[in-house]
Length: 175
Image 1 (cartoon, rainbow, N blue to C red):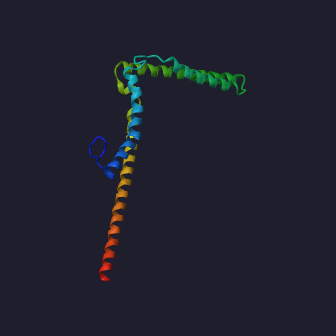
Image 2: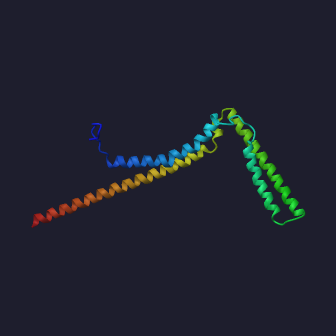
Image 3: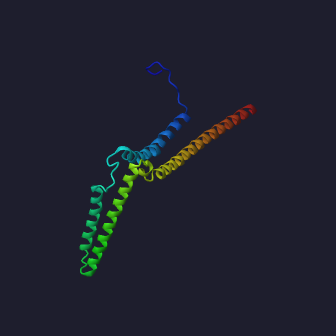
């Protein structure tokens, strides 16, 4: 008896195995789903920049630093003259396109948030949740099959022992 005075309840092997399965599902499916869905949902519903329709400075800075590194790499190749100018011009056009695209995306996300389109603020959440749920189902099926195989093995072991005991009794009766 536990200290509280309540009788202890014995757990069946099936209950213990189900608890293990549920714990594994929570760790492998529940937590990752919350990690995917919650941050964008919180940001969409009330986080910083909910109604922001411009590209944040930190995002533009990241784009600019990548292109600055590419420019440095081009300058260090040893190429000179028209080919260098051509590569730098192409890089500049690509940078401008990337900044423009990111600005348009930021504007669109801000408008969608302002209009209350929460699903638009959670990109790919449904896809990721579906994939993780499928992984969870696969894992649950595997664990269930493993438990079933173990139960069958235990049952066969019991049958084998029963047959052995029966054979021994028959042998003893004929002696």
